[in-house]
Image (cartoon, rainbow, N blue to C red; front, side, top):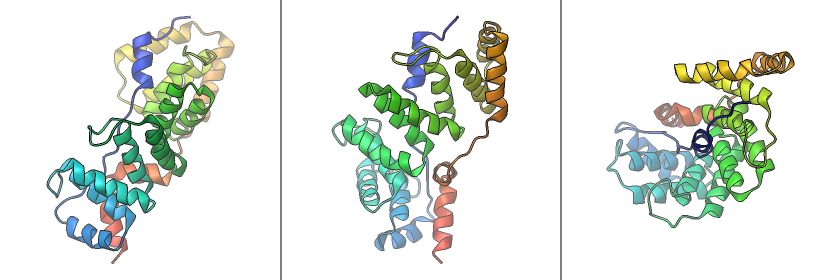
Length: 238
């Protein structure tokens, strides 16, 4: 059975990003007033403003300070951002520390953030804990997170410590293609892969695809809403 190249599988396994909530000039004063009252989410949005330079002068140092404070006050997305810093994804303001990166990202993963669940899976895989990695990857895939879907398909097509499962590879790769702007090369790969499945395997894969319903959590939806989340926060405090 043909497998994805090792390079493609590695790229999928290492796929990671670090959120995109933003704010603007009109929101900053309101967020700052809430932050003065220790509103953790407001502090998180200010951290994003400092990080992106949207509404505030860009300052990675102030962004880190805001994320650290918001995380301490219980904001899970801020904890995720702290995990990004300790994973080395946000520059060199802190020393890379995989254990701290995992600890912070697990806060967001447990709270339901799909990207954090995908990242936690990656970090556990790097530690050699494949069972726990797959558990977190499954949670991210269940939310319809494209990175988790692609990685879940890839690792079941041949990864160290994972029993190859062509049914899951075909099913989850098809789910990925249904939710992304798939290339002709990707579609051709799936067509070729499915030709190599037995009738029973194709039926099982089709059952997974037909029964799948993506269920993003409120935290994942909030993380993806970006500026809107900040606007809603301010509006809800009036």
